[in-house]
Length: 353
Image 1: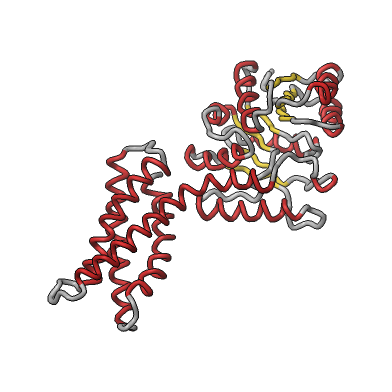
Image 2 (image 1 turned 45 degrees about the vertical axis):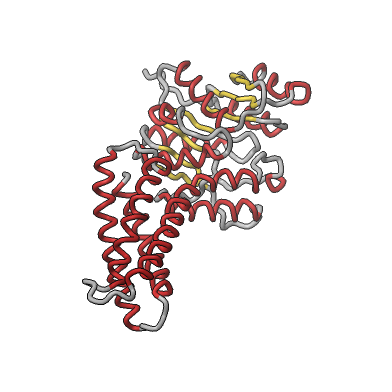
């Protein structure tokens, strides 16, 4: 006989009757244990909900003295479960605002048992009618951005219904993010740790247009997209360095006769050497945090930089020869934009893998 358990974790801040309804359904379905994390709700206004959850529905109540955010509540609940349950398979996280049905919670549990090392995502269908516009826009844009910039493809980046394996929970305890951005960082971490993502279709439920949600579209979206700014800053600032140095070297070499391979190629090489050194140091220390071998990454980066540099010089020279009276930068900018996308994917998948 097995005593394997999958607790249901419900982070809750300023709950209402929807939390009680969810707990009632969990109890009726004999789903346990249930961990409710009170993330600093006002005791005088919301204490009754948590007392009822504990006394009538047998939930374990954990508390923050002040509101610390959903990410911190989840990580503290993970730590509690890892210490408390010896035969832990993993956990299921669910929101307290009525968006997740018992049927779907059980589906995620089943998927975790079948994929004990995976991250299971309960994904909603945002093409259905009646879904708040902010939710449709936020999820679709974030999914596209995450797929393009991080190489993590999921249909619903903001779903709170997730089943997380024990081994992944342990890694997530050191994952950055205290509020809603933690759930995005969790997805990014699957890439670093090579965690399989399993998507399970669930019902798309929005009650009163989800107005009781504490997700703040402007502030919390900014926090989520801030995850990607380091990627953009590194690449764009390197491009600026490269463009400025290219223009300077073109001004130096343009009037000199007999330069091997032409002044554009020489200017490209000189500018790219400087910008590549800058870019590598920023990527290693800031973007990718230097987790792997610096030497190995540097060798891969040099090979990539040389290939991109030669492609840039060759393509700019070729296209400039077709319009010789145009400024070199007019040709270089679109060429390097295309090469930038190629370089980014190679860096993400190979250089700093």
